[in-house]
Image (cartoon, rainbow, N blue to C red; front, top):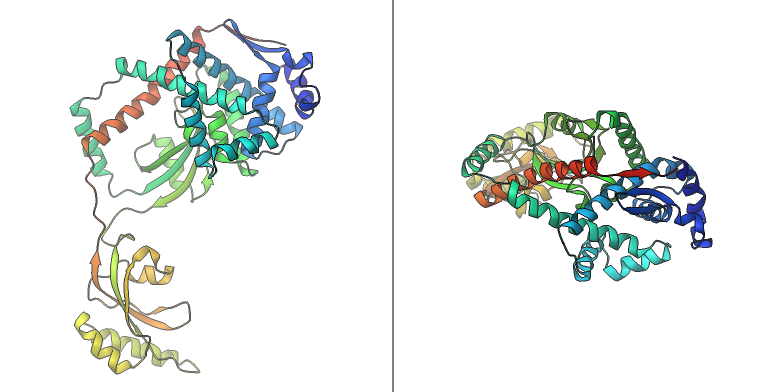
Amino acid sequence: MAFAAALYMLFGALSAFAQAPEVLRIAAVVNDRVISVLDVVNRMKFVIWSTGVPNTAENRRRLSSQILRNLIDEELQSQEADRLNVSVSDRDVDKALNDVAKRNNMSAKGLVDILRRSSVSESTLRRQLRIQIAWGRAISRRLRREVRVSDDEVDGELERINTLRNQPRFRVSEIFLSVDDPDEDEKTRLAASRLVQQIKGGADFSALASAFSQSTSAPLGGDLGWIQAGRLSRELDDALLKLEPNQISGPIRTLSGYYILQLRARRQPESAGSSDAVVDLHQVVLPQTAPVDEVAQKALAGDIRAALTSCADLAGVIAQIGTKESGSVGKIKIRDLPSPLREAVSELKIGQPSTPVTSATGRTLILMICERLEPKKKPLSRSAVRRKLQQSRAELVARRYLRDLRRSAFVDLRS
C-alpha cells in the first residue's frame, strides 16, 4: 500500500512534525469511520516499544500491514459495541491498565512514566484496552444467547479429563491469526512467519500476542495456562510434543487459521513419585578414602543396601559406618532436591534403599524414605468444567462474530 511509504518516513521523526498534515492522511475507512496514518504510527511505536523489536525500516515494513489489520478489527469491534450501547468507564480502563502493569511487575504510574519517557502515547494503550473491554462485553451478550453447556456435556468432559490424567501437562501461550478468506491464506501465513522471526530475534512473545493475536487470550499475553495433552487440536498437540520448554513453534495451520505456540513449561503425568510429595529423607554417607578405591566403595555400598531392609535398620547401620554426615536430612519436598538425588528417590518405596548416588560434594550416598506425604488433590468441580467448556465455546463464538462483522463491513484501504 502506498500509505506504508509515508508511514516509514513519518515514524522515525514523528515528534518533530506531529502536527504535520501528512500524519492526518487517511490509511483506511471502516464503514463511516476513519483510521489515520497517525493512528497506525502511534500503534507502531507502541508495538515496537512493548515487544522489544528493533526499530528498523525493515521491521516497520513487516509489522505495518498486520498493525493496520488489527486497527481495522478494533474499529469493527468498537462500532459493534457502540451499536449495542456497551459502555466502558474510565475506572474500567484504569483497572485494565493496572492489570497490564502487574503482569510486567510494575505499578500503573511506573508503566505510564515509562511510556512517556519512550515518547509512546498513553492514549494508544488506553484506547486499545477500552476496546478490548467493550468487545468482551459485547461477546458476553451474544454468549448468553448462543452458549449453553448441558449436564451431559459436563459429564462427557469430566470423563475425558479422567482419561487424560496420565498425559503430560503443558504451560502454553499462543498467538492466533485467523483466515476467513482462502485468498488471504498466504498473506496470513507470511504474517505469522514474520512474527516467528521477530520472536526468535528477541521480541517478547506475550507483547506480540497482546498486539496481534486474534484469540480471546490476547489480553493475557496469549497465556492459556496449564493444559493437558489431548485438549487442543491434533495439529497443536503434535507441535507441543515436539517442543522443549521456552521453545516456540513455527506457524501451525488449522481449520480456522495459523497458530504460533510457546511452550513455557512441561509437567510429567502425576504418579506416586510426584515431585510435589514431601518425604522424610535419611542418608547413609560412605566413608571417604584417598585415593578412592572404587571397587571397595561399590562392595561397601552393596553390603549397606543389603543390610537396610527397613527404616528400623538405619540407626544400626549408621552407627556401624560411623560417618558423621549420615542420618536424617529432614522433611523435604522432592522437587527441591538436587537433580541426582531427586532422580534417585522419586520412585523409592518407603523403607527401600536407593542405588548409590554421588552428591554435589563428591560423596557417595545411599538414601531412604521413611515417610511420604502426597499433596492433596482437589477434586475437579463440575462448575469449573462447565466454565472451561463455556470459555472454549466463547472462543469460537468470538471468532465467528468478528468474521461476520468483517464480511458485512465496508473497508476502504486508501492509497
